[in-house]
Image (cartoon, rainbow over all chains, first blue to last red; front, side, top):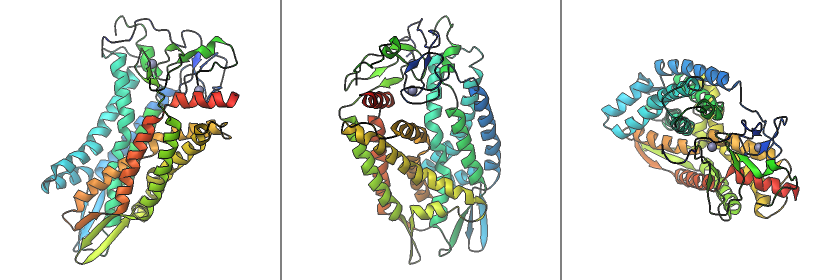
Length: 212
Length: 213
Ligand SMILES: [Zn+2]
Ligand SMILES: [Zn+2]
């Protein structure tokens, strides 16, 4: 993708002294406040964007810590209760030989959240700092982060399904643990962090790069 | 769709890429073609034949499937001669006791309420469009809402969750999938199809053209 397209000198709406709508693409004079086509609020660049991104990202990381320390679910079977954290659940699945599912849970609950924290922090940092990674690649990274965020919710759904299914009338009971809440919050916060990111900032930073 | 707006200003002949702000000439995109940004390759417009009609058909199908998915059991668990059926409502209510109670509302929202609101919003906005009528009142507001809800409607994530849960309890008891599970799978397929037909910029342009005509 490096050498295709991306003509070196592309004019942005901002360069032309205009504002483009991030929802519908309509171009407006800089004095316009809301888009005449779709009604979205117009901003040359969302100046507070990075602050919002950092605030939500830090909140997401903070609530991710108890999500790993406290039990995600508790299984009560024949008088004794076992509590499982996220990692504990993955290990147990591997003991049962279901490596595929253990892989899904591991990726959705640990790899994706952590990779997402790093990716969002990286994208936010590189808006103001110059890096080797081209704007193209950072844009792709942003799209991946945006797409993948919701999939981390899998484990919360699994806990809910298991708890509704395995109830008192069986030998075992499964109840959700407090980690389910903090995990769900962590996913939501990082999703908001990604959503508050003004994509256009990625491209502004690379404006005067000599070569893509 | 490509009729020039009455305001004969140059601004109407340009479009800014929603992703990177590149200023481009707003050429009329033929049905079946895809216009993407030369700078960041984001797809800007991709009108598809009968897209509006197809989207409302799919949204209607999705609504019906959702009703089925909510009321029929989606998992059946059998152990020691007993059978337990779990419906979507049971799943939502799983967090209803104890410290996890606030999650109940969030679950209901993510799996049922937000997807349903999106289907209804799309029907409301695109229904009149498909028949060539004027946009409904507040159509712009409703469509903005539908677009904002998009990342939060997690029906397809839930389906993968069901599959994982199935494997987890497989050792504990005999588990089988209920009719609602298949309704939900169909729902996810329909939702993905529907979102593929949807081109945000095209919808906005159509809404604008119909409003002023
Ligand atoms: Zn707009
Ligand atoms: Zn672009």
